[in-house]
Image (cartoon, rainbow, N blue to C red):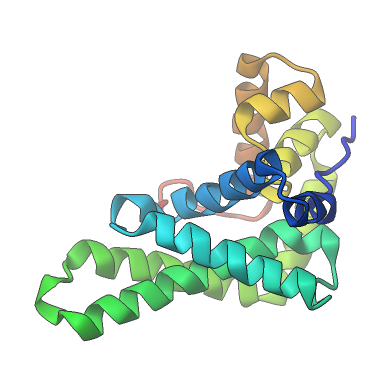
Length: 190
C-alpha cells in the first residue's frame, strides 16, 4: 500500500498566506531533523535554528530554487545540518572553553551523516533495498523517514494502529540493515 507524500510546496504556499498550521507542520519537520542529530539536547538556541532554517527554506521557495519537491525532506535535513554546524562554529569562536565534548560528538554525527548522504552508491543501494521491502514496511519507512511524518500522522495516513506502525518500522529497519549490510551493534549516534 503506497501513500501520498506530504505536498511540502503546498505547505510553503500556505505559510506565505500566513497559515500558522502550515508553519507548525514545517517546524515539526525541522525539529524532527534536529532530534535525529540529538541537537536539541545541546543547543540553547534551538528556536533560533528553527527560525533560521525556516527562513532559508522560504528564501529558496521564493527564489524558485526548490527543483525537486520529492527531495524536500532531505533538503530540509541538509539545511538543519548546516545550521547546526554554523551554530557550533559560532560558539567555538565566541568561547572555546565553553564548548564541551558533547558538542564534539554532535559535530561528528553531523559529519558522519553528511558523508553518508554524499555517497551516491548508498542512495542507489537504499533505493533498491526500499524497493525490496514488503509494501506495508516500505510505506512506514517512507512515511517516517522520507516524508517526515510523525508516528501518529504516519499511522493515520497508512491506516494502521500506532503499535502496528512501530512493529512495521522495526521490521523494515531490520530488513534494511540486513539488505545494506549495516552492523546493528555499531554506534547509532551517526
